[in-house]
Amino acid sequence: MVYSARAAVATSHPLASVTAIDMLRRGGNAVDAAIAAIAVQCVVEPHQTGIGGDCFALYMPKGATAPIGLSGAGRAPAAANPAWYAGQGITELALDSPHSVTVPGAVAGWCRLLADHGRLSLGDVLEPAIRCARDGYVVQPVVGLDWSMEAPILAGHKMAASVFLPEGRPIPAGAMHRQPLLAATLDILARDGHDGFYAGAVAADMVECLRAHGGLHSLQDFADARADYVSAISTRYKGYDILELPPSGQGLAALMMLNVLDGMDLSDPAVSEADRIHILAELAKLAYHHRDHLFGDPDFAATPVRELLSPDWAEFARGRIDMSRAAAPTVWPEVTQRDTVYACVIDEDGNAISFINSLFHSFGSRIMAPRTGVLFHNRGAQFSLVAGHPNAIAGGKRPLHTLIPGMVMKDGACIAPFGVMGGPYQAAGHAELLSNILDLGMDVQQALDAPRSFAYRGVLNVERQPDAGLIENLRARGHDARWSPTMIGGGQIIWRDPQSGVLAAASDPRKDGCALGL
Image 1 (cartoon, rainbow, N blue to C red):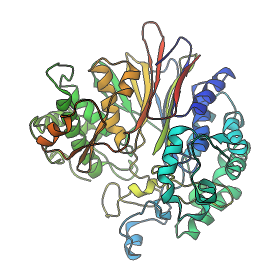
Image 2 (cartoon, rainbow, N blue to C red; image 1 turned 60 degrees about the vertical axis):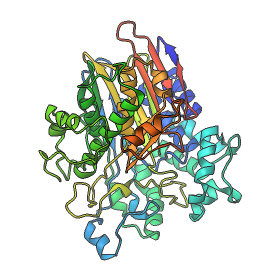
Image 3 (cartoon, rainbow, N blue to C red; image 1 turned 90 degrees about the horizontal axis):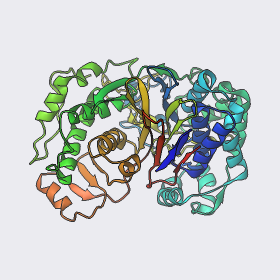
Image 4 (tube, one colour; image 1 turned 90 degrees about the vertical axis):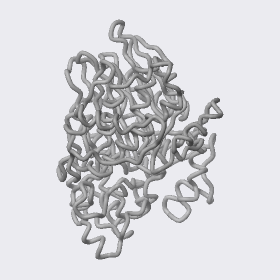
């Protein structure tokens, strides 16, 4: 954990953390620092994020009473609809299909947030990322490990493989890597802003590439790209207000879990680690089951947010938890059915930002525009092809998103911007992280270090820990429990002491990053 009296940053990559600090030293604020850090990560963590992805943020200016929510979620092409896919015999949106690519929203989000709330120019903010892409960067240990593990998925994608598998091999940790095409594109973006990406030669290259792969994208789809400000949703947990972005993100699922936990005492010594994992697993199954049946783009579907955050739903969920037995999830009968990087910054003025940017799966769709070096995400794979489903694909629609920046507030002031990486784990991860801090009394670094568990799609993965009988205990309750073959997620958090103002910043040891302070 890093303490600071002035300002603090935490990201999943050391170059990104240093970049954020440099932006603050140059007179930038939290917005400038976060976007600069994320832009660097779009170069140096290419499997996790990129300018061909999406972004989301919660920004709390000093003196404000509520954070500003930003949705940089990309939209499906205007020509997309379930009937067209059915007519083509397409029954699922494959992860490497052009149909999994929505118009990237990250750049639109950066440009809007920076123009409205930053201090520095886009050129200043993007300069470190341009330098990394043009001059090269050293691949860090966790990035190198991930790169080597994910190399086989790139082999069949000629353009992406030429950049990320030169000579047919992944770039190992400790080696230099350059992305000159991406550097040139970032240079255009730095000069021309939003239109440098969504119009002109860059947009033409992206559209031509996607259409050549069979996509439905048009230049007009890119010209229509925008990022939207949205109002945060919240719940009360152990005396704090926890804020998330509304659907189409899954932050509502995190709040649903916290609502239930708020009526339980996980700090009781009688609650064993197996009990705690069991409770979190049961809650995750319930919350995610509701997510998959009810969440969608609010422009197209009305997610019952108020009902799902009600005391009645929390009581229903608590009543479903049998401490001796795992149960199958079910949707509450009272409602009608209808791989990522993160950065947080608190600057010297007290402005705070929680920012997340992603390609979704590792290396996204693996489709790369040949002249611009833009690697496209595959967030559209989250769409349903079932007509009438709240998350059914439609022209101009945003898919269900796993990306969720979080923020803790108390008495109208920001206490902590925080985020947890790991795709679908993020909602459960928010609940687990905050429970570690507010129920178990861990400091923020301990809370990130602690072993994790995640129940998803019928399997309960648990990170290894000394209790050898833990898995057997969980299996006896009916869970398909197993030691997780990989680390679960990542995360960063900065916690501000409301009395002293001292900042405690932490970065997850599962990633290469670090926390730094001024």
